[in-house]
Amino acid sequence: MKYYPALWYDIGPNTAAARNALFGYRAYLFATNFVGRIEDFCEAHGIKAGGHFDQEEIVNPVPVNGDFIKLFEHQGVPAVDDIYNLGRSNPGYKIVSSAASNYDRPVVFSETYAAYRTMNEKIVYKVAMDQYAMGVNLQ
Image (tube, rainbow, N blue to C red):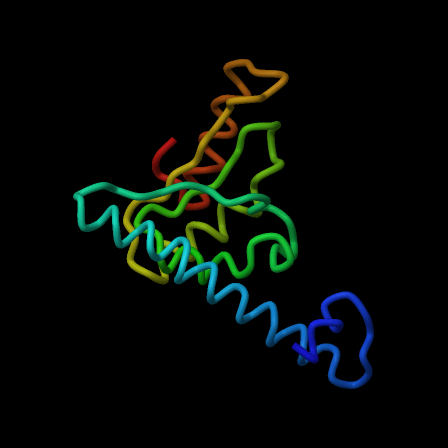
C-alpha cells in the first residue's frame, strides 16, 4: 500500500518499479479472476467465450485494462472492437492475433462496422482485408 501513490505521483527512484509491480499485479488479478473465471464457466458448459476489451488499439492499454496478452491467455476466443472508422483499430488486430497465436487459440473475432459513419462496399472490403491480413478470422 505504501507504493500506491506511485500510480499518480513521482515517489523518487522507485516510481517506475512500483508502477510496474502495481499495474502488473492488477493485470494478473483482472486476467485470472475476471476473464479466467468467465472462461472456466463457459468451458464447463460448452460455450465459446469471447469478447473485446476497451481500447485495444491504444499504444499503452495498461492503465485501462492491463496487459492484453495476459488477458487473452484466459479467453477462448480473443476479440477486438472495430466499430468506428477505417483504420482506427488496426493496431489492435495484431495484439489480439498475436495473443491468439501465443496461446493456440484458432479463432480471432472482431466486432466490426457497428457504428461506422461512412460505409460503402470499398470500406467494407478494405476493413475485412485488413483484419484477415492481421490475423482476425471471424467477423
